[in-house]
Image 1: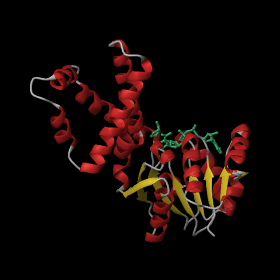
Image 2 (image 1 turned 45 degrees about the horizontal axis):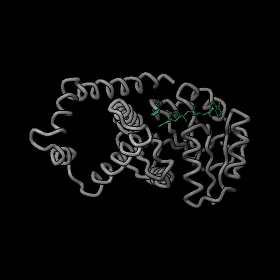
Image 3 (image 1 turned 135 degrees about the vertical axis):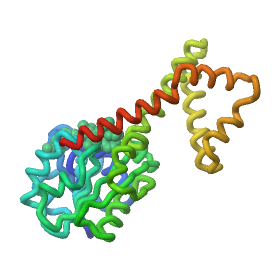
Image 4 (image 1 turned 30 degrees about the vertical axis):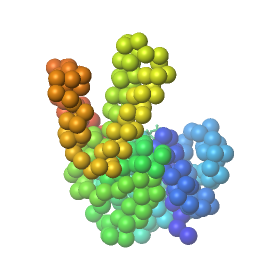
Length: 266
Ligand SMILES: NC(=O)C1=CN([C@@H]2O[C@H](COP(=O)(O)OP(=O)(O)OC[C@H]3O[C@@H](n4cnc5c(N)ncnc54)[C@H](O)[C@@H]3O)[C@@H](O)[C@H]2O)C=CC1
Ligand SMILES: O=C(O)[C@@H]1CCC=N1
C-alpha cells in the first residue's frame, strides 16, 4: 500500500489527516512530521498515527503533503530535500508557494502538485483546486486529486489562477463565518436572545447553501425570490449597497490575492 506523509499537522494538516482516516486509509500507511512535541502526542493519541521526523517521513512515504506555513516552507524543503527521490509526489497545500519554488529545492524527477484546500474539508465538504508542477504527469495529478477528494470536491486549475483561488475558496470560509457572526450580533442588537439569534443565523446559512447547491440557480435569482417589492429584504439590501458591501468584498478578495502573491517569497 502507498504511504502518505503529512508534514505540518496544524489546522489544515489535521484536517487532511482526519479526512484520510475517515476515507479508510490504514493508519499504518500514514506518517506525520510535526515540530511541536505536544501537538505530535495529541495526534498520535487521537488517530493512532505514527509521528516521525520530517526526514523519515520524506524518506518513507510515496506521497508527501506539505502543510506548514508558507514562511516555514524553505526550511522544511531544505531539511527533507536530501531524503527525497525521483518518482515521489510532493503535494503543497501552502498559500502562495509556487511549484517552481518547491522544484528549485527538490531532486530532479520529484513531482510537485500545488493545492489550495479549505477548512470545510473537516466535514468532507472541502473545495480544493490543484495545479501540476513542471515534472508532473497525469498519474501524479490523479493521485493528488484522490488525496483531496477524500475530503471534498476537487477542480484542476492553471497555476496562475491559484492566488485568486486562495482569495475565494481558501480564505472564503472565514468571510462566510464573519457574515454569520455579524448577523448574530445584529440579532442581539434587535433584542433576540443570543442562542435564538445563533440558531436562526446558522440555519439560514445552511438552508441557503443547500438551495444554492440543490437548485443550481444563480445567487441573483435566489436573492430576487426573497426580495418582495417594497418589502423588508429590499430595505436591508439597500443598506448593504449604501455601505458598499459588494465593493468591500472586491477589495477584500484583492487583498487576499495580493497577500498570496507576497507569500510566494516563502
Ligand atoms: N487554515 C486554513 O484555512 C488553510 C491553510 N492553508 C495552508 O496550510 C498551511 C498550514 O496552515 P494552518 O494549518 O492554518 O497553520 P498552523 O499554524 O495551524 O499549522 C502549521 C503546523 O506546522 C507545524 N510546523 C511548523 N514548522 C514545522 C517544521 N519545520 N516541521 C514540521 N512541522 C512544522 C506547526 O507546528 C503547526 O502545527 C499554510 O501553508 C496555509 O497557507 C491552505 C488553505 C486553508
Ligand atoms: O489565511 C491563510 O493564509 C490561509 C490560506 C487560505 C486560508 N488560510
